[in-house]
Amino acid sequence: QNARGRLLATKANILLHQDQLADAKRAADSAVTAFEKVGESGVSQTVEALGLLAQIDQRLGNAEAAFKSQKRAVEMIEKAVGNQHPVVAKTLGQLARAQQSMGRYDESLKLLERVVKINEGVFGAKAEPTTDARMAVAENLMALEQFDDAIDVLERCTAAYRETLGAEHPSTAKAMAQGGYAQLALKKLDAAETTFRGAWTARAKQAKTDDTLKAVMQREKADVLMAREKCRPAADAFAEAAQLFAKSAAATSLSVAEALSGQAKALLCMMKAN
Image (cartoon, rainbow, N blue to C red):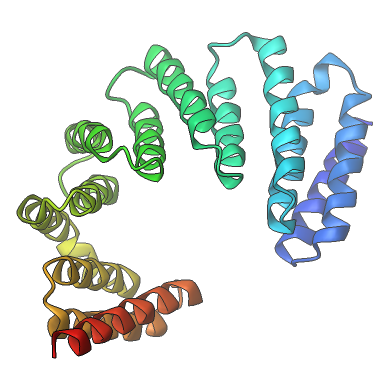
């Protein structure tokens, strides 16, 4: 059954990457069943298969089914290894994402705070897995519009990443940029621009060879200009961001659409001003 489960899980992964989601779901379901028949020695494989099944259900738009699979995975792994194991933290993080997909941000926040505590106990307060978990907490707080709390968490993340990974590391820059957006939401425009400039400085070297990053930075500059109601420069910046996203092989069509939407809002701002 163990070998059969691995074969089915591999098949499900291949089908998932080929966007054959219905067939992938059937294969993942069968993999879960096969691993369950192995018994206690198959718990870790069952949990992984449940995570795969949840991922497929998310792609299919079955958020509730994905949540149930992730919840089942958490219960299984906690029973097997206790509630303070890194694998439990990983599975809780996946369950939190399932909650977020259903708009259950309060429940998700509680799970993510558990992840932080587990990782802090296992890896240390400033270790990368702990800070990554805090970043997820900050993003959740922003979804709840608790921007002041999010800023506090993001400043802590920035400091930890800077100390452990370096000032120019992508994670350091991402934490700063997220902080900039939280400050924009609170209309703290000068503070936001200062924070963003820190992120742009951190990304400067990498952006020379990364078109997607150039586009992201241009989009951020456009958002700052728009927040300051500098409509014409914002429209030009959004247009440039859309062009950069379109040229980048790594960018998504959604990134292009969001930049064009920003440009449209800036143009409407110009019309109102006139």
